[in-house]
Image (cartoon, rainbow, N blue to C red; front, side, top):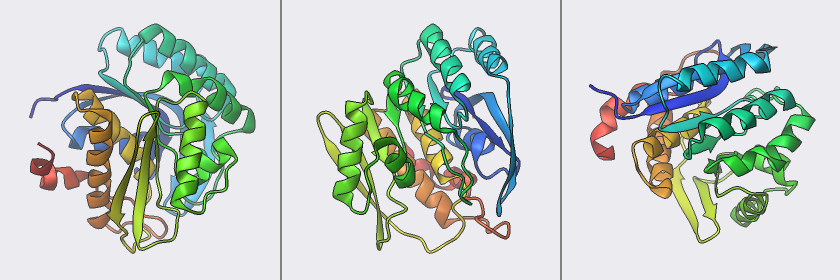
Length: 270
């Protein structure tokens, strides 16, 4: 199968393989595209939690990106874990140079087990500067609360938080609703002209490690293939839901999802 497009992933490494750049590569590859990477940090973790985080020098992150895209130009970029203000400033500088329009930002802040993955100064720079360079930002509810200082308990709160992110400079926002306790999961897409609620069945499972990384990478992949932003979100949500439903049940904690499910449901995406 020939790759349909090229996606650059800027994110941290997850040694357990369920989240981070490993989940991103699996997602992009499973959906038929070509993945390139720039690693921002190395995490030592498994399904029970994060043991430590080793930072990559911001200059070397910048060099990874510049040297890669000078040879292979990406059709879309997915940005994940950016743990410090120095890293975010370097990412902004490199985005100005490479001028790729289809950029998906997953503002990774807290690991599934509760470990904090970004410092406060970095959060402020992400809010005030980086968001403006992206096509879409995909926070979960705790991340949206940190970015907007809005307590989210309902779908209306999710919409209000998304609107605040639009005011901060985001062009499109998809707030993931998995943290709200309800029979169904509601992911809410918002931009200046519309609001769309994606309703999905909730699966009773602890195996959801890497869902946010996977969703944002899937959105980037569909965008890279030329699909519209809202369609890319819808297809990515369907892919993640199927990956959760068919999870391999690995590990003692929050286990990974099944990225290879795309081979089984690929016809539905055509």
